[in-house]
Structures are given as C-alpha cells and as structure tokens.
Image (cartoon, rainbow, N blue to C red):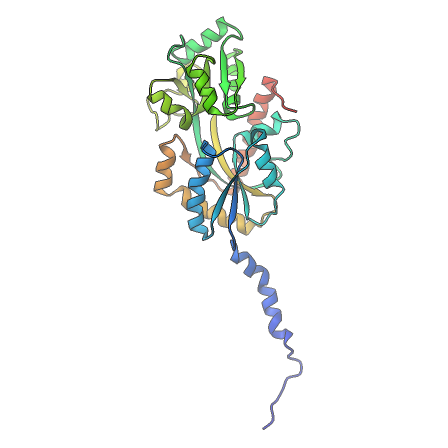
Amino acid sequence: MSVFRKPWLSPWVMVLPLLAAAPGAQAQAWPAKPIRMVVPYPPGGPTDIVARVVGQKLSERLGQPIVVDNRPGAGGNIGADAVAKSAPDGYTMLVATTAHAINMTLFAKPGYSTRNDFAPVSMLTSGPLVLVTAPSTPAANVGELIAMAKANPGKVTFASSGNGQSTHLAAELFDSMAGIRMTHVPYKGSAPALTDVMAGQATVMFDTMLSAMPFVRDGKLRALAVTGAARSPAAPDIPTVAQAGLPGYEATAWNALLVPAGTPPAVVAKVSEALKAVLNDADVKSRFASQGFAATWTSPPETAQFLAHEIDKWGKVVKASGATID
C-alpha cells in the first residue's frame, strides 16, 4: 500500500503558525513570575501601608506574589530611580507619592523624570494632611496662627518629615497664601517631628492623618484644620484650612502606581483593570477610610494628566519658597 506524500508540506508548515502566535501567547501569559512593588520609604509609614494593602489584593487578582521592596532615601528618589531604570516588562512597579511631583523642581538632579520615565497606571489613594500643634500653643485656630506668625516674623516654626515631602510643601503653600514666613525645621520622618511639636520645640506641623490623629485623639496634639477641599470623613469635626481662615487653600497627599516607560500597553491595561476592582473593594475602602485616605482609581490617561498638574502646581510652590537641593 503506497502512501501519497505532499512534498511541499514540510515540518515548518506546522511550526510557523505557532511562531506567529508566540508574541500574543507571551503577552497573555503575563504575569508569569512574582512582581516587585518598590516603596521608596521605610517600612511602617503611610506609603508602605498602602502598598501592602494594595499589593495583597492585587496579588489575588493577578495570580502571582507581589513583593514589597522598601528602597528609602533622598526624599523618595532612590526607589523611583531604581524603577525608572528597570526593565519595562511589568515586573517592577513604583508606589509614587506627592514627593515625586515636588522633586522634579526641588532637586537639581533627581536622576529620573516623573513625567517621562514612567507609564502611569492609576492613582491609589488621596487624602488631606492635618495641621497640628501642641495644646499649649496660644493659637487655637488657623486665623490665630496666621496672626501669631505675622506678629512674630520667623519665630513661628513648622516641622516636616523631610525636605521636599508633602509635609514641607503644604506649609510653604500655607505661608505663601497667608503672606507669612514660618521657619522650616526638617526631621528624618514624622515620628521625631511630631515628638518635638508635642514638646513645643516646633510650633506646628502638617502631617498625614495616619501619623497625627492618634495623638490628637489622646489629647497630646490639637488639630487646627485639614488641608483637603472638604472635611475628612475620618474627622468630620475638624474644619478645612479654607473654612478656618485661608480661603482657596488645598493640599492633598496621594499615592499612585507607576511602571517604567515602555511597559507594554496590554500589561498596563491589565494592571489598571485589576486595580479598579481592588480599589472598589469594600474592605480596602474601609481600611483606607479609617486612616484618612480615600481609595482612588483613575485610568492611565487620567493619572498622567493628574501627575502633570501636580508637577506644575508644586513646582510653583518650590520656586516661590526658594527651596533647592543639589
């Protein structure tokens, strides 16, 4: 019995369709290994807490472990620079903060560009800071603080968690809009700064609600105002800065998820959709709300637009303050 063979049908005829499908198959396979989420601050702080909550839920959605990698230093620049220079394959992510908009003007050479070296994925959280002082401070509200600063130029001090942090620039914006000049006292983190505010070594501080509100509730600090456009659901009895005597003032602290520029759009879209579900999760919303944050999902184009606005906004504040870091 003879077998009829078609000589033009080589083994490559069967292989070529598989090769043609390979790129799509690889894209669909992402993620195929653990993902690294870089937090450019020490463990235990507000950004680290956000990353760990989001990372756990996002891991469940994507089906791969997400490893939080703390890379603190240089006001958030060390971690951001490391991610900017990572392979754009979706396996390295950055939890960015307000400082990554501020640093574009504050630092002469930050080492990266928040505007150009990343592909924005989504916002994660946003929330106000809270303006606090010691209960013994004569100023019991925003109006009295402004009057005290005007009567004592340079003698009223404000603490911050470090040069260029939102806790620094929120006070610089306050100074500029109020027409006053408080003296900046930077610290290495919120904890030592708040300690000195409680002791009266520094007059006031704009800090995250997560850090400051436990001391307010214990009576060790007095809250004068929150910095958002509206009162915080976590502390509805505290007025906004605008309501308390400085109309038009608004400053928020935020976190966003970024990946290196050049990351495949399909990967960005997959992470974005997964984050949409994560940030709409009732448990996530509740956990963040209890700490003064709002879970905030935005599309990649909306996130890029927001970052550009923040870079421009805080750039003006930095230039007006005269603050620079070489």
